[in-house]
Amino acid sequence: MPVSRRDFIRQVVTVGPITMAFWMEKDLLWAKECGMPLASAECTLPTPKPPVRFIPNEPKVVTRYSALELAAPSRATQLKQLRDGVCLLRDLPPTDVLSWTKLIAQHCIHCAPSNTDNIHYNWQFLPWHRGLLYFVERAMRKLGKMDDMRLAYWDWDNKSSRTLPTIYAPKDQPLYWANRNLTGPRWPLSDAAVNVQPLLALPNFDIFGGTAKQRTPVPATFSGPHANVHNAFSPGDMADLQYSPRDPVFYAHHGNIDRLWSSWVAAGHKNPDFGTAKVYFYDENRVWSYVLFNDLRDEAKLGYNYSSLMKPTVKLSSLSNRPIVEKNGQLEVPPTKESLLPKFLVLQNVHLEKQAANAVDFGVFFTQPPVGTATANDKANGFLGTVNRVLSSGHDHHADPLSAVLEVDNKLDQVKGPLKLYVAPLDPTGKTTAAAAPLSAEAFSLISE
Ligand SMILES: [Cu+2]
Image (cartoon, rainbow, N blue to C red; front, side):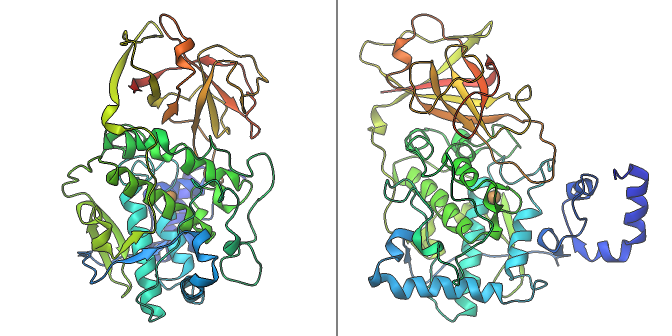
């Protein structure tokens, strides 16, 4: 039964003392009208005391290994520590701010689709999730008295890691999660679904990781592999933006997104000065704390590094990034020197509001394909790549803009003269579910080699 605005306010007043005991994003009150429980334990935190500044300065650097590496008998100790760590948090009462339930809540309170400060759509996306992983690691380390324990990362960029990592699969161990779909057309993950090369080539943090202002632009790292791996689990908790941290594999997936950020920096790109921007978490002593983004830029200070990093396959110093001007719906691709090969097409804030409300993948084309056009393994129909998002459960979705970087070499050289782009929603097999419509975005650029 729909709840009217007036009924809703009355309910809040009636349960005032209870709701006052919790802290939640204003937008989650709105969520009640969509049928979500008002004060779900997984989406509320106790009202925090004023936050205390936390300055990470770990005495030693310990390596985070991939889930594949942790499956080796020689890494049995590290694997056991990871599993023990998950159990320790799971065994805490759900009211404990360090518990698995409240970890989900730390993420959930920031993720309501209407939240104007949603951590996924501005420059909080990378630092916030790095902070989450760091404090999870610290909590596990303290509770288990295992200072060398570190989280794992799921190296889906590696061709041998395109299905759920084996250490997460068996029942009767803490990395198992029942609500996971592991079959269907998205499995195993395709090269295209987890291609990190376009992201590694992005020259500026603004488009890679976003800016202080919501959706200005949406970080390109939110689309692509990040969204595609979440969505592979659909229907399942991982495919639900708000509740994905229920599944222990969330932490390995975001470990790899964090590793993508580290790899981008190691490839020679620069993090910005984030000024006073900060993230808030409960530390391992249950103290409500804040960390400056600037204090999260160096993983060594956070006590970890990665056993390997992703490497750009093109020489970044030989890339040039040129903005493309849009005129009357056409892109005026500037004349290139013969030697310049268009490599990546950057689409900043593609407008998707006229697209199918519940689609997660949108195909970008330089022709206008009809409904039912297949895109998987097909370069013939003007298909350039996809823009992707992750949905939140229990909400109607008006499609907000998204950014993406598409690997377009060997495709755009077919184009002579001005370029016109189209976009269409795709089903999980990659077929268009509607006729393509002209694509509009806030900015375009072409990275050439
Ligand atoms: Cu998230």
